[in-house]
Amino acid sequence: MASRSKRRAVGDGAPRPPDAPAQRHEEEEDDEVEDQDEDDEEDSDEEEDEDDEVVDEEVRVDFEAYSISDNDHDGIKKLLQQLFLKAPVNTAELTDLLIQQNHIGSVIKQTDASEDSGDDEDEDEIFGFISLLSLTERKGTQCAEQIKELILSRCDQNCAKSVVDQLDKLLSDAAKPVGLLLSERKELAEAHRTNKPCGKCHFYLLISKTFVEAAKNNSRQKRSSHQKDELVFANAEEEFFYEKAVLKFSYSVQEESDTRLGGRWAFDDVPMTPLRTVMLIPCGEMSGIMDRLEEHLSV
Image (cartoon, rainbow, N blue to C red; front, side):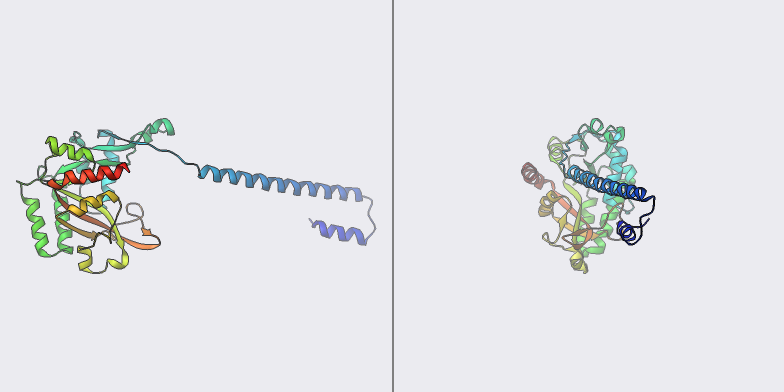
């Protein structure tokens, strides 16, 4: 179909044919179509503006701690896989042990998730969990032995021999139980004070998700002795444990990370290398750490 400007030029240069009114009618129809298109565009713009308003809405989500149960198996296992990545640790067995000792620890879920979403699966979705496993009491289980082997091997790759020997001795001393602290909250300190099973430990072993600028992660010395101001903690409160640790080192998990488990990380457009930072904290320091943690969370 010719454009309106072309039709106008033809009409001025030649006699108007008998069906000229029909041509005028077509022009009016074209005008109506164009007006309709403009209205549609305006409606579309208004809808986009409304969509933007919806995106900018603040959504309040409340979380609550619940006792660990059998229904939490898949969620806990998934979070453990995100911690250990591709390391040879039997996360299924570790999950089973944590559920068996549900007298300590809890899982973090969205409050009234099923009512808000209408999806039954959301009710059991876990956003975090808190627990403690005594590596000393669970000696002989596959997951406990694998975790100790993992920590010692990474320590051997990144630390001096004296540090490796110290860690090996501490992990082997049955008189001074070592507990794997899978998260940290006040109830863990409470478990220590009341001497619940798996709650009485001489040392607490914590493996934290941390990051460091890629440019600062080149040398063996750097990997084994990152300064606190170089490390970025995925959970900021874990810095309190780092400050009181009697033994600590970091190792890279860059080769084990992928978009599903580890993702690609950058802060302020600075490439970051994902690490795991191992800390061994004496039980005597836990009370002070918990006080600082409670103060931090109340701000």
